[in-house]
Image 1 (cartoon, rainbow over the protein chains, first blue to last red):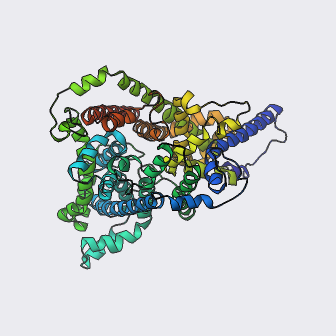
Image 2 (cartoon, rainbow over the protein chains, first blue to last red):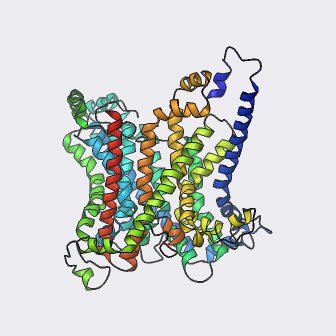
Image 3 (cartoon, helix red, strand yellow):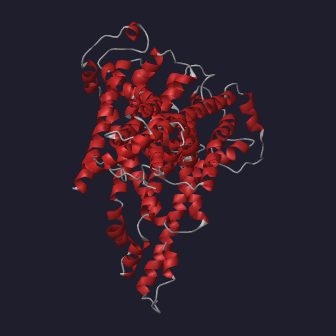
Length: 293
Length: 320
């Protein structure tokens, strides 16, 4: 920001006073000290995740492995719950995400094109409210509701609860994308005899694809990491997603199986990291919609 | 925000009354009706409205009713709960562990959301602004990864990091110690953990806000001899107040309802990290007192409402 403009400064003082130089030097030192400390603060707790999975004798400390091995990943293959839980996580996140994309696209389009009094205030209140309710404040009624519907111990219960909780934000973000589209194409298509659904599918959807990608990636990451909802609604460990199985690995009695924990943590985390790096490279990671871009 | 119709749109997170520009509405109706009929529109909205209504709004309302009953997880009171009036609420007010959970939650929100994430997030955004370097990218990626990695993985990373005997933190400290951080300083530990976990949101939000300030304004201030601190106070802060309030509101509400500390400490030792969500979980699912848990949930919803109203009040005051 300031670097390029500095070049256009017309006049530059020949020798700045010593006080200014000292202040600049101290400022630089403070800058690098802060950068170093902040970098360490965020990096060091993650080191274990990178080192321990390949350590022949992994412990709780983040250490350079004395001998590198892939044996720890065999522990994942041999554990009866590990791979199955990753599959469960994949199933839950993909289905929930598809449901959210479909429902959010339909309603965001309708809300964007038809004026309903109080629409935006209502959406905003729902958005705030959803962050609260799906968190924890409604765990008791959600459990009772899913119980009454006979969906305890079934993946579909988790999918519906998470979709309901994440949808307001999805609609909010997508509506913002749709508001920005010119209506002339849609009007022409309608004049040419297309149905409203065809207009949405063939004209609007291709244009708002970045918006669909944003809420899709966001929903995937949310569901992939979610712990509380499956923890409450699924009793059978064979149905549990990786979030719950991971927690069980380190809290259930006996000594923790560190090789298993290390390798499983890495396998469970990698998809999110890969997805993030992909999105970051392709689109740049920034704010859309409600939170000013 | 890229919007074509201005009335009622939420700019920078500020709710504006919908009837602000009636002429716009008439114009909108004329344009909108040709694209999508009322009935088709209702059909499009129905799936999302149904899911949100059944799995989001209904549970929140139902918790108010369940809180007035003695419904339990198992047994006779599970099948046929009785109406007990305000018994659950009076029991809560007399339970010292409820008050403990409330105080722990407030300290947790104040320490990790309002102080930790907001201050660290803003500092990172301000200090790193306009610095074109690999190091900056690496730091930003690390901060964001801490935010998006699965909760149960980051919880275990911190259990390992803070371990007394083998933990990396103790190994890094210049003096020899075997402090069991999660047992001896549990609340501080989860506050630092949650600061680490959630700073990304504030950093990204403030980064976007600072970028939206025209560079010429900062440049003018700099040429006029303003120090970094003066630029911050006189140019930047007045312009990002809306973002600051948005960040504070969202972070307070998210943190108030956060369950992740359970993955580190399960509320222990001796209830020192038992925030309200963990208290509700323990009462409802470990002790089976669903009705009591629902009553506490209702109190939590009320507190959330107060946070939101306080925020809207501050925004209105600023606007008028």
